[in-house]
Length: 288
Ligand code: NAD
Image 1 (cartoon, rainbow, N blue to C red):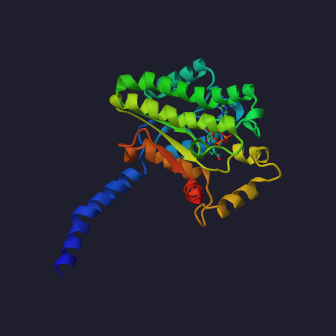
Image 2 (cartoon, protein in one colour):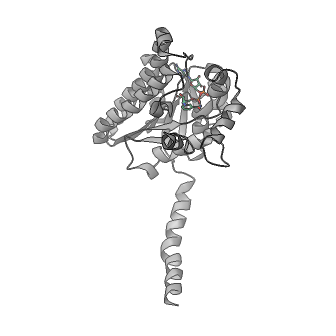
Image 3 (cartoon, protein in one colour):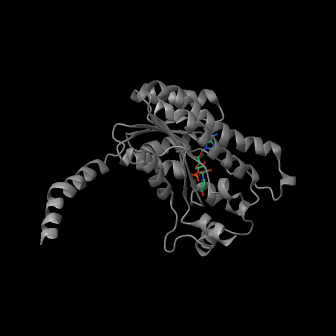
């Protein structure tokens, strides 16, 4: 009886209050925040832009694909805007950050997400170094340039949140995909290195490492990575080799992880590489 009464009182005065507080902030976890997302014209970036807007943020879509980026901004509504940006060009990245501030007054979230797979080489002896440089200039130089310019405007405010997209190929090595894999190991390293400096300024830096997500990058490039196979077969292989039963990865799964990391829910998380792979890498490790 005493316990029942205690539960009732907790519900009435404590937990219900907490629950309603949670519910009231749930819809607006990014209310008042301004986010800049590179590579947001499609795939993971676009899904994340949509999720951030749904949670109250204003989002700048920065992408090299002008038409697709403008269409994405129109589709996502008045809280989205597009700016053309090639992340390999420092002047473009700097201009995108300045655009966010000119439009909204501040920048709270910088998501360095743009990336390419590059063409596949079967052996390191076959590695095309020009292609290696191209992949590194987008996946690595683009990321550190984004962090540099985010820091430029976030350090004076002593607050901010930086996120990057790495990959499980930057954890376990890549399937004959050296340039991409090396670039993603480097992204995880950049996150560690910059997080340790920027935490002193109240700025968190994290990355997400997805496994295969059905985005244009994977759907169009899968036959290069796995000759003779289509995307459906690859996702079947993943399902059969240790990912969560009954769950197929979608870009929204990465967007939800991104939301956690950039919102106050993740306020004490920095320098972290959040693996979102349905258990795929755990399974591979267990297998070894
Ligand atoms: P995607 O091809 O749908 O999106 C990538 C976006 O980046 C495109 O809109 C493209 O125009 C843009 N982009 C490319 N080069 C650019 C440049 N120089 N400047 C600005 N924008 C540029 O692919 P995605 O799967 O959504 O990829 C997003 C990120 O996720 C990438 O960093 C990718 O490496 C990473 N990732 C993807 C997967 C996956 O399975 N899809 C897995 C792990 C990591």
